[in-house]
Image (cartoon, rainbow, N blue to C red; front, side):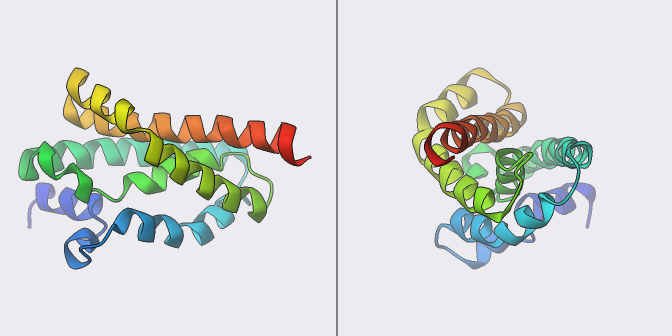
Length: 153
């Protein structure tokens, strides 16, 4: 097994998207809620460090994924959900923000089809795949902060 195969396995979380034919992004996102709750107990610098490391790992895995599978198979990439949700709950103080962040992030993912199309057409594919999820996380974080500030408390 070479490095490209390992990167493809990382990007698809060990091939989960091949096993389950349903929308595995939602399944992975729900499974990430406990990880995101644990993530909130870390300090802000640790959170930022983990996000940067994940972004670099994701970029490298996308690069090999696009070489091996092609850009048409990008919907099989599941590791992007981890980065997007962790950016969304960046600085969250408790589990209620994580659950609300999950809902907001899924809403942003559903509404971001024009962003995905624009990024895939105007940027290199591996760069666009990472930027899409970083921007989704940032947009969801902004919505979450707005909701927490003006609508909840």
